[in-house]
Image (cartoon, rainbow, N blue to C red; front, side, top):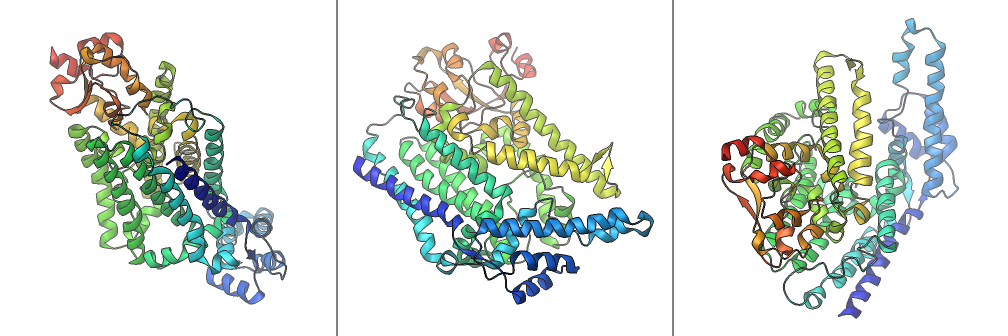
Length: 540
């Protein structure tokens, strides 16, 4: 069986190497006729950009993506600089600042987006011309290799029960060199995805046929991310089924997150796009869906007819009514551990690293300050955005709408949620984003803390202090400390994943939805635990 695992690992690494290596392949250039067609298609309004692009990328020389991208970005930068000089030179009374805007070619301050669009048109080579074969050599080999590595665990895991024996003895799961290699690869992937999308254009060529079948258009870098996201969750979901095969709660929970990610977050939005409707993830609640109230999204929904208005109303109802009501009855676990795509990736791809969550008191203090700060940030951003949208102003109390949206998107949407939130799985645990940054988790946690029926009950008399529960808690809760005292666990950070209960050899821990009056233990207040004081009063 171990031989099969090693063969699977080798096949997986071959697929991963080919996938990564495709970045360095292909040729990128335009003919004069192709450039004229592209400029007409984009509606560019001046001759300067045509001249700059002609000098940069109309060539018989074979350019790789790095050379092409550099030349294309410089062309847009030079063209913009030309009109920046004109705007600065002429009297503002002539309205040159407004006239010049139509000649500025920038997309949300991201020059790589323009370069990506050009590269998508200009690319040629083996990858683009053999998409099916390349899919097999990358995604196909990756899936086959991963499954060959995972499936033998059915035999090797042996008897039922999950123990932490050996989990800190392997470099892949104890912050060793393998974990650091995984971190570097994940961080690099997210940096390319968010900030250097033009470098990933060959990845989009591989998935063009699938994208065209689903939404009628070529694949973007976000389609690649969505497809890769689902593929990883499915493959690592098999690992979850094997590892927790003796626990029905974990089996059903894993099926649930896979269903909501693949169907709601990926397939439905792609199919909606093919039908000329706004692609929308109906489970993605604000403020996790932080751009829901951005002006461009509101206008897009308003202009989309009845379906757009329905989405707008649904998004508001989901956030203000459905989310808190569901948390009251089931705790935040209904979303964070059963529905959310971020949680789904954390529970599948991130499961091998869940033991790395920091259990210290300082980490808990940082968690509470940081996650609620992000929630406040998102609410202020939304307030400013909506005020400016309805009033026509550019700022509120000195806060410019465009600035705060760009800042949040860059710091929280890209760096925190992506680069750090997922890239740092192997070192800081699988719920870095959910624990420290997700504004929706903060909102759900506030409801769960003050008005919910959910709790994890403990039977201190049965606890043998093995530490499995604390080891596997991805949210940094020292579960054993509660279990030893026989106290219910009522923490706003708990996502109700149930792993602590699954790994307990004595059945000490149970996830329950009972009367509110039974949630709180009187000793919790004396210990300074995260509790609802009104519940304590009611208990008395």
